[in-house]
Length: 183
Image (cartoon, rainbow, N blue to C red; front, side):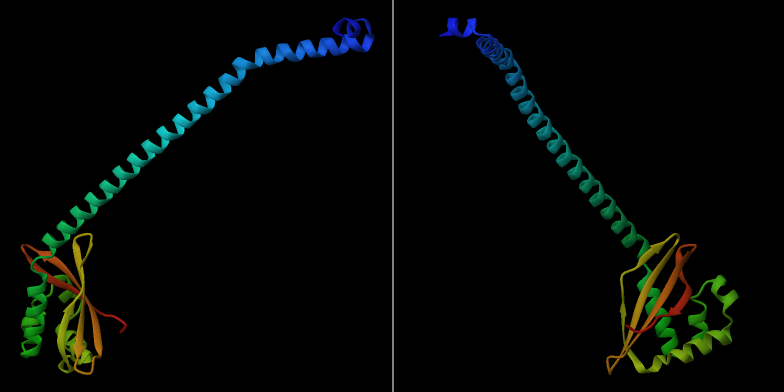
């Protein structure tokens, strides 16, 4: 049959095409093997990227955790001594020793707020109606520590105040007192 097709003009074309197809298949064998090899190599590369990515993510999380821990320890160590100053400040005010409370402030505060302004500020707060004091979490801002203090009245009314502290020599001093909007 091949001989009959070979004599016919269309048969020659068919035979030539069949031969070319066989040759292509033989040549494509290694090519298909190469493609399979490339696919498996790409798969291994993706696994490698995923492994490296996972390790990089874990290292980043570890670094972040270390930074957070160091910051928390630094905050706790730096904030020691602030709560006694707050307690002393309100004890002085409650017992009527306003001058002693005023002296717990920094020279910078006293240069901007004179004694009369300090008295008016305290009178405006109406501190005599508050019974409990709750301090929040201290925040470090440069060389200052800011502490939000909430004074609570018996009727659950709250008066939030931001106290800014600065270390003067080895002692904490009040550098600013700001009344906040009630939550």
